[in-house]
Image 1 (tube, rainbow, N blue to C red):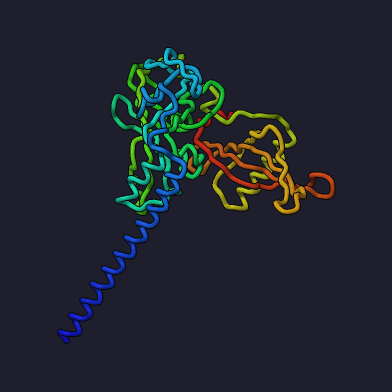
Image 2 (image 1 turned 120 degrees about the horizontal axis):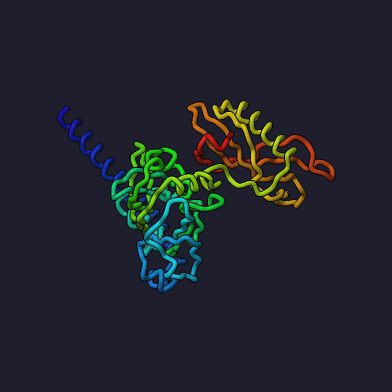
Length: 340
């Protein structure tokens, strides 16, 4: 009996050891391939895109005007901001997103599809809000393989564009106390690469860039900010009452069929025109799609919008038939007063 126990113990230990070695080899092999994919395109000494980039590594810089790539005007960079004015940013980091993942991968296996850019907002140094934004798989491969200069707007005067705009809007909606006070404070913004593990715990891969602004806030600026479409529904790129009505009916029926809780009340056309779809092999026209945004209320009383593509079949020599939902995209919370 004792001998059998020793043999069983040895077999268990051997199996565990073999399994551990196998997993290590598998992990090393994946890491090796992962690194090869990167080094094929990326050179460590060729990442800086501009002298201004080199001078601002790991930083987020701000301006009241769009900061154009490779055409920087440092005189336009600001450290003081009045709420309600346009606010653009550019983030400079000194390591590619791929290389950050590889460094982390050495100690903890991760899938690229799980990794996103995590935006953090701080008021006077205290973290008050964080939100996952762009997933790594949605970022162009070239941008992942180099020192990048991510750009966009924190507050845009006419519409949502790129990173930070959506999360800033959500921050203000979920923390109305920030909008109710007339005050001055330091707004800090950090961009991280991060992911959620199997226990929904946020795991930080690394800091990409950070920056801060001295914010002056008064009621005029707050009202100006809320009046901006950038904190409301997406901007309509075209108007067609019949198509908007048909799209809304289609979206309502689709939500009911899927047993969703949202009650859509409005649709805006976010696509300027239709995009024709053709068969991959034959080239024959299949149908056409167009971007819309559905706006409505959710079961919990919150108001949101979500992007969709509507589809219409091509029959005979014309586009005919009822509309259907072709695809679903991103969405965001909005103040309910924009529905009025």
